[in-house]
Image (cartoon, rainbow, N blue to C red; front, side, top):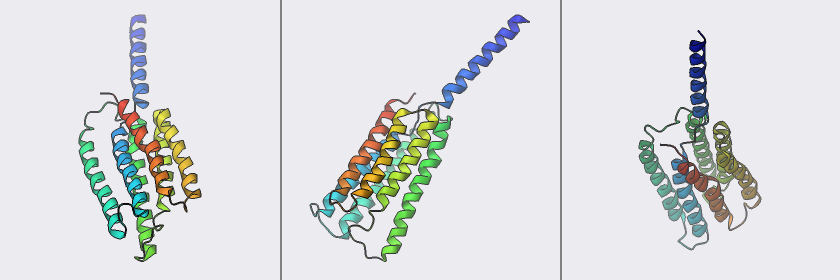
Length: 204
C-alpha cells in the first residue's frame, strides 16, 4: 500500500511540475512583435522624413508609406503564422491571452484611424493622425503588461512600462517636428527589441 501511495504522489508531483512549467512557458509572439516593430519603426522614420520634405511631400508619399506598411505587415503575419505549428507552450496562459489582446489592440488602433479620417472630412494635414500614436502605445502597454504578467516575462513587462512612458512623452512633444523620430525610437525599444529577445528565448 505504501509503495502505491508513494507512486501516486510521485505522479501527482510530476503532473504538477508539467502544469507549472506550461503555465509560465515562454511567450511565442516574439516573431510577430519583431516583424511589426521593424515595419512600424521604419514607417515612423519615413513619416518623419516625409513631413520634413526629405523624401517628397503631399498625400501620395504618406499613402505609399502606410499602404506599404499594411501590405507587408499582413503578408508577413500570414507567413509567420505558418511557422507556429507545433510550438511548445502554446497552451500556456500568457500565450493563450496573447492573440486576443494583441488583436484587440490592433482593432482599437484601426478604429482610431478610421475615426480621425472621418473627422478630417478629407482635409488631411501633417498632424491629422498624430493622436493615433499615444493611443497605439497605450494599446501596446496593455498587451505587453498583461501577457508579460501571465507569462512572468520581465522583458515584456519592462517593455510595457516603456510603452506607458512613451504615451506621456509623445503627448508632451506632439507639436515637435521630430515627434515621429521619437515614436520610431519608442517602437524600436518597446516592440522590436523585446520581440527579438522573446524570439531568442522560445523553446523548440
